[in-house]
Image 1 (cartoon, rainbow, N blue to C red):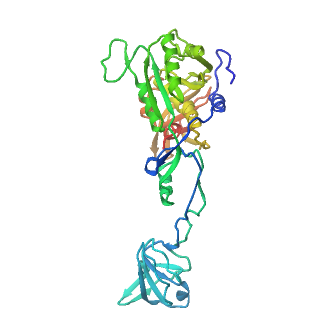
Image 2: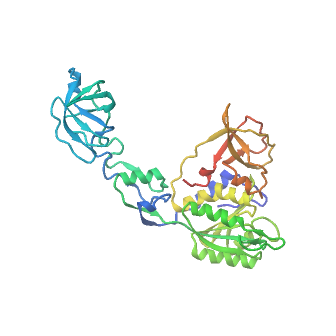
Image 3: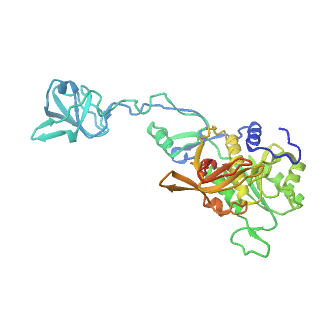
Length: 411
């Protein structure tokens, strides 16, 4: 992958295409029980071993009937049997009804179910007050899932309804991709962990907890490499140590051009750097490379920049490393409720919330200060509004909107 000339800004779509083309899946499979499979990535295709439902059954409480009896004008019936769910009835006696309950198998000879609300019971007789045609209120065998049907392909991330479908066809365990081991380090002599007292000039290390939480939400294992002091030697040692234990490395801070920003130089000394300036705002400083064969992603130190780079660049790359099947992006466009711009030469990502309105349904509102250091703008947002370069926004303009749940890849 060629590195752009110094000073060149790389458009995010181009950067992501280059990155994804250079990454191959590294994670192997492991077997988990169904109750441990939520949000895991399938390692193989799954075909239904049985049909669902496995037999014709009643869709409601009522009476199973041969619709031809109704077609001949019969309206008074005797009940010849009772079939609760979990029981199997006998063949239906001609010109009788079977009392049947939701989910119970249809008896042979019956082809429809009359809702109990459409019947009147007097003594031993049931009077049908509203007729039905063949197939009414009957759930056919295989109507939900056919035996042998492909349910999921390799790389599918399992959601709650998926787990229910797998349970419904009797699957108790399955092969999934093992979690990635992600080494996470942060740089900066000013950083301290929450719980420690702040000294003059110090700040709490929020980036570690933001990125670590996002990684855990994706099901990955986080290797805490700690806070690395701002020296070239310490940074190089931390990268080499991380590469020995991890499937990939993520750092926060130190990828800009300041005298104390050592990640870029350390990466060039112990590995390879491919590009490090993106045409987005916030989030321009970004490093990608390898420490030996281990992929490395260098996030900026500003908390909003780190979050946006993770969501837009790193998360899709982690999906590729784990073999997640890429899904087409669903475009969202919602009207703005604010003025903004004009933007400069970089594409901007604004933190916005969705606010209900009686006239237009939903509008996008800014979540306060849009500076790259204001983490509260992310905490309060529902997603990102994309503003192209050299563009102004007026109230009512339709903006491309990325929901937060979609860009962090969690279900």
